[in-house]
Amino acid sequence: MKRRKAIQKIGLSLTAGAALPWLSACSKPDPEPEVRYEGTVAVIGAGAAGLYAAGILSAKGINVVVLEAAKELGGRIKSLRNQPSEIRNLLIADFPVELGAEMVWGTDSLFGSMVKNLNLPVLNLDELNKPVFVLGNQPKAAADWATDADFLAQKTFIEGIRNYTGSGQSIRQAATAVPTRAQALINSQVANVFGSSADRVGIKGVADSLKARKHDNKIFVLRGNPLQDIILSQFARIASAVKTNNPVKSIDYTADTIVITTTEGKTFEANKVIVTVPVSILKAGTIQFSPALPAEKTTAISRIGMDAAIRVVLEFRKNFWGEDTTLIWGGSSAIQIFNAGVARSRFYQTTTITVYGPRAAELSALSRVAMISALLAELDLFYKGQATQFVRRNLDTNEILTVVQDWSKEEYIKGGISYLTPAGTLTDRETLGKPVGTRLFFAGEATDATGDAGTINGALVSAEKAAEQVVESILKAT
Ligand SMILES: Cc1cc2nc3c(=O)[nH]c(=O)nc-3n(C[C@H](O)[C@H](O)[C@H](O)COP(=O)(O)OP(=O)(O)OC[C@H]3O[C@@H](n4cnc5c(N)ncnc54)[C@H](O)[C@@H]3O)c2cc1C
Image 1 (cartoon, rainbow, N blue to C red):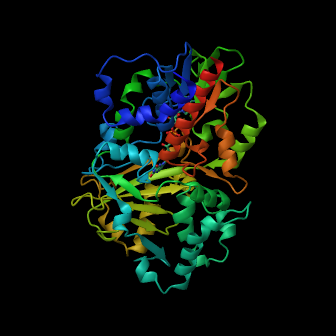
Image 2 (image 1 turned 90 degrees about the vertical axis):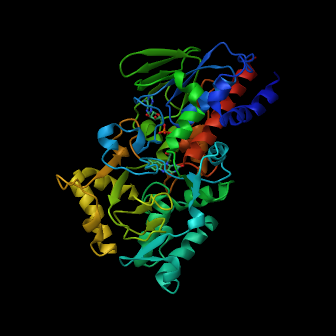
Image 3 (image 1 turned 45 degrees about the horizontal axis):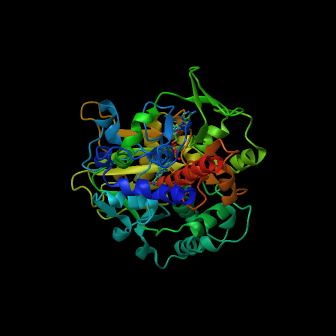
């Protein structure tokens, strides 16, 4: 097959097989490999990016091995349903409860389209459009704040972010015109969504990401399936190539045969490697590269942040925040509250609270009891003591029923999502994603420069790009 044709078909082949991968697996015998390659490509990390990159290459007939540090696939896509029973049984809901990625960004994004192709029932959050905004500890809908000058100031600021043209500022520094009373709304709706606090996230990175996005800005959740289902069914064919419990500690790409060594001293040989680990793992120096990564890459890594992240699931006996409420913005501990059962359940009043950045680090340092008390105390302020009154407890022990996923304590994730610091630009993400020579490639959400870093879509787009680069490098050599 001619090179251009092979590359053009990369994206298509997986999308076409995507709807029913289990059927295509038992259809006609595999045709001849579309890309002839005697070597092996090793993919480090079996999150969305690693699985997708491996899936694309494997569909091209290329021999792939995926080395994953954890005991399971999926990385930052993790749901309550797949947890051990002692955790899963703490909370029961008749809809998916996510411990990591929760929402699908863009109905026409790569990931959005994959989900749509599976014809699973979804819930478009924009159609409900019932967020609540907290100012001065009062939660109200936007319409009820319509004459509040502070609320309007933060709204104007947020709507204008994409037009920002300066550089080197944090969101907080760019938002000085917004009165203190409304700053928490900016922190939660913008900084937290982008992965940290308003003091740490750069405004230019946010502005440029918003401008770079090509898909619509609709957000949806699945009604009945955890996101893990999509990843596992989509990439079912590649699961057998994944070797779990293999934390990589070094990659020696000095010679044609690359030697990958795990923390337990096992070695794997490959001819090309795609590294998809979180940027926090690269920052921590967990993987030693020989030769060392080029200076431009380490500089780019230093300008990309990845801070602590906590997801807390709390269930209540009564919905005191409003049946139709989707998200509650403006807290300083419970920074982003999702009414996870909205339009999905008549029985379970479950909220998922997501906190990134310094506040997540502070919560992470507390005991579980103290962490939950801090979150409930804030909800009590907003809802006049009802959080503590109605939170679901174990009937025998009176303990609060909750599930906490502390991403900073996951040894091979070490945080939430990548963000651009005030010094960072989308070029840093591009630099992080650039191949080193023709044997070492990079993917993963932090390398996405199309405006979707920090999302599953960004991870998938980056994987497609890295797979293309690998195929190109093979075809160029033949
Ligand atoms: C709390 C939270 C909420 C989120 N909400 C959303 C959301 O609503 N919507 C959305 O689209 N996205 C969301 N995201 C982001 C989304 O989950 C990620 O962007 C995406 O899953 C990242 O995929 P990835 O493949 O780049 O990285 P990962 O999923 O992190 O995969 C990397 C893999 O590399 C492995 N690894 C690390 N080190 C090594 C090593 N040394 N050797 C071998 N393997 C290693 C890890 O174990 C991991 O499995 C959220 C993330 C978090 C944490």
